[in-house]
Length: 638
Image 1: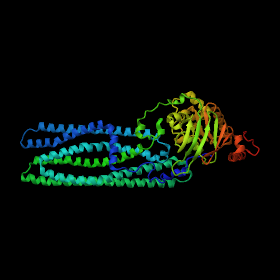
Image 2 (image 1 turned 180 degrees about the horizontal axis):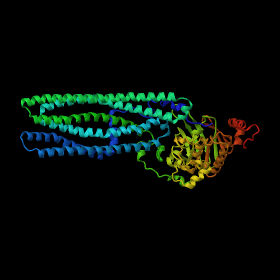
Image 3 (image 1 turned 60 degrees about the vertical axis):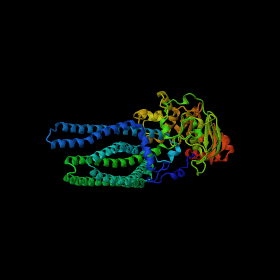
Image 4 (image 1 turned 90 degrees about the vertical axis):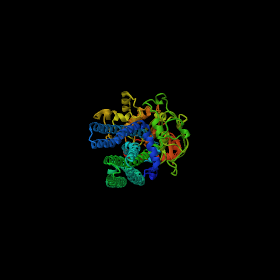
């Protein structure tokens, strides 16, 4: 009798196959947008990167002096003069240039690690704060890939790209100038080859960027498919669907392989053409230079110095070509990261009623509140809840789940919501928690529109137990204190007794510090439900939302927890979605929902007498009760 978002309808724009585009994220951006995104990520580390570039540049300048020093050594040898001093100078140039280049590379690598750490912190700050509709229409596996593999690409490419863009360009220009001073004819031959390499780069690099984006998207989709399978592993095994799921993952892996091979092919084309052309350049320069030496136009030492510069220039040109390719790879990763950063997050302040859109950079800049600092410690009176003509659909074009729903829940006591499946009961809780916003109408807490509440303060006032309770990997203590990190041992022990978990912790090998496994796999369904109830009670909420919170409990534990809820209702407003007759009959008031509307309200006796739908639902529960306990069993009193 509980209602949930229309799962089948909401999945229409989610990938039916891991190789399809995840919904909620934009497609690949332009090359310029990628470069702008990459520059934005690197900007906070520009000081360190400039220092690394400067060190590398200084080392390269010392490298430029080495051919001239070598020419000087050869000239001295030709004149029969002592070579000790010039050789020492040449050796110092070699050592100092290598040390400075290595130090510059280290500084660039450190700044790249800082860039990646900043991006990961920003993304991990943002992802838990995404709006529920956004996360429902986005593949979690793809988001994980953006935090992990895309940031790895960013770290790997950033120092190479920066070094190639700055150091490589400046040293290449300086090398060409020095070569021109030695011999203009040989320089002309070299520049012709460089121009050809430039044409290759211009043609090939856009293909590298596109192929890299497609590869990363394919990896993200494969991660999404794997997360889908592992997240429902028991269901997959029970259905005997391992082979089908494996085949889908294999198709995703094959798609990722094909896109990766395509990217590697374009990189290989670029590197091969550059290497071949540069080798041809060396042979041509050697032939032309030999002819000029023979004719007496230049000396042997000049040709040797020119060839040394050419040897130095060749890797620089290769570095430039590789750097441009790495720049495209980094830009592709930066675009995917930026797309994740642009996903809509929940607002934390009071101004969201005016429709201000939160973004990742704003979320990352927002100060964190320390645990337990919310308003819930100031105001302890039970809350009131009011729905005023609320109209809501999960997405435009889907049928409305709520159609002008109006009701009021007074402070304190237990209010039960009943109705057939799909009536909109669970959606009531989702709207109160502001997982979704109503399309029309208002939801009020204590007479105040919940859109005017600071979100943290609103949720700190509410305890929520879902129909399918979630237990996170970690210890039992971690799960109990989720959102209540300031809870004392006495408070934890108290809620353990209320939720009938004390007997469970007594038999666990490490008590509260026992690991519960992935999604609480080491606990039974009833134990997970009791953990969720204890967690909600530990928050000392002013409003307690229970979505069929005892559905997996045995009769004894259910009766005990029903007494706990009744006692809690003396100081907290309890709103419960229920289908068990025992829960409904003890409620102070009951709302009957049907087809997204509240059709009746009253006590159990009043509704049995005046509402046919409620009477039918109650009689169904009575029949089920007698089937379980026998025809002569006493029916719970009204």
